Image (cartoon, rainbow, N blue to C red; front, side):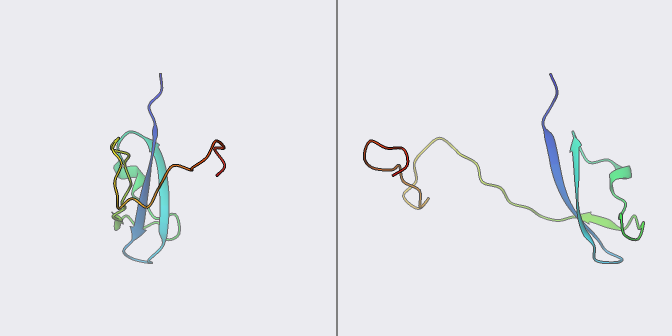
Length: 72
């Protein structure tokens, strides 16, 4: 069984290029090279994600459709 692919958002400190790296597992040093200028002065950008924690939240803004149709 193969693991899930992770997406890493990176930015080059030298030229400002933003790029994405997809890889299985952790980011490696060889992934931290800017495809535009070749610099290794690259940092990972902070990215947020949403997680379904299994509970309903009044502030989530999502509600199940009413009526018999799943299309509202």
